[in-house]
Image (cartoon, rainbow over all chains, first blue to last red):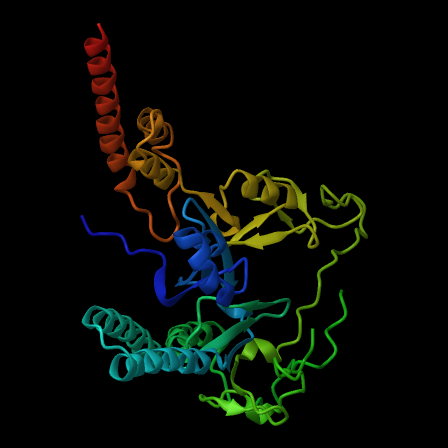
Length: 196
Length: 186
């Protein structure tokens, strides 16, 4: 028997609705350990369907759905943020400081090995952050709401998602042109038709 | 709703030549890097609202909810006559507001479902927890909710059989422990 096609296809990117600012979780980790993840909130992912874009928020045992019909999506906004650059600077600074300690200040072999491992760990985090590219925040706009897409935190991921959903939106709405033609009927800003 | 787009940082309106550039560009006012993809729905005026036509000829079919308005379609679920105002067009069906509400509550209309409890994952998690009653409870949940709807996006059909297997193992271990304690104390 042929396997049924799944109704939704996963899009890249995973985000969390943090209950506290994400940067507070770093110092809090040293106090609470792994239990700091309790503040992380629901996991959010994007799934693309035939008729709508689906945002799935999950706390592990319950899923919450938000559907955005392709014909209702008005705009998709990507805003580049400085968070990635700040993280790069911080991680680079820490890795450099630890490496300089290894080279210049510490004589004990065990301490050097420990510091070198720690510096390597931070260097790996730095490399991961650099390879993932610049950070961003994304918004999806419809006629009645603007939704923050928390799962899209990197420009590259956001563009991948846009590449997937753009054909779906254009299939239902028609091609998106850079500037609207003035002759197009029913341009926004005009007065809506009066109710019958 | 505004007919213009404003920069998310400085709130200054973005000019139309900013739309659909396909790459990041600086906001003319605050220089924050933005990429704005605008689709034809943005340029469309909102659809005119239907209020329903009043009955002008006596004896015409009237709306169940608004007796003074002309019925245009029957509800495909309950058969009540509906005016244009009460007619809700969803998934190719014409429904009345009451059936829409009932459908949402009973989760019969999938596109209205905004939340789903994943009993299969709960049962599986219980079957892995090494507490006294979690094994039997996992078995109970796996049997009780074996037909409950699974996740819309990743159903994880293996979770219920796995919960039964691990729950049974855990329960057997519990029984063995109780029997061995009882035998050693006697």
